[in-house]
Length: 182
Figure 1 (cartoon, rainbow, N blue to C red):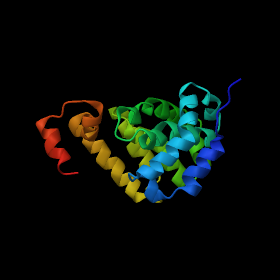
Figure 2 (figure 1 turned 180 degrees about the horizontal axis):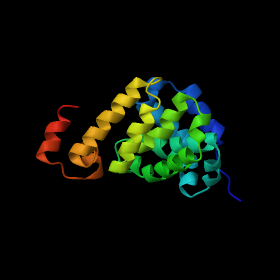
Figure 3 (figure 1 turned 90 degrees about the vertical axis):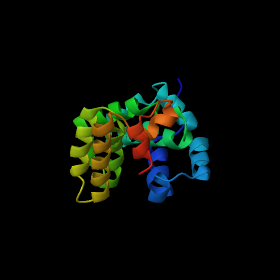
C-alpha cells in the first residue's frame, strides 16, 4: 500500500513555522526550489488521491488546501500547472468549511482554507470568498480588502486577466489596459 511521503504535519510545519509570510506571496526561485524538492512527490501522490483521508480533519484539510492551492503556485510558478489543482483545493475547502473545520484553525490558518474561493474564476465562489474573508477582517483586514479587489476584477472581466498569458488566453484591449495598472 502506497502512503503519502510527508505527513500533514510536515506540510503545516513547513508552511507556518519554517516559512515566513513574506515568502508565501513573493517570487523567490530558491524558496520555490526548496518547496519543489520537499513536496513534489507528496503533491503528486495527493493528485492520485492518496491524501483523500486527510480531508476528514481540520489540519488534514488545511494541509490539502496548501498542497493543492499554494504549493503548486511555487513549484510550477509561471506555468499553467500552477492552477491545475485549484478545483481540488476548492472542493477540500468547501467540504472542510461545511464540516465546521475552519473553527478549529487559527485565523492565519483559516486564511489559507479560504484562498481557494478567492482563486476561483466562478462568481459564486468569489461571493463566498467575500463572506469568508469578511469573517476574519478583524484579524486580517488586508485579506478582506484583497478579496474585494479580486471580486471586482472577476465581476468586471469574468476571469483574472493576470492569468491570461500563462494560460494562453487572448487578452482584450480592456484587460491589457487593466494589466498595466496592477
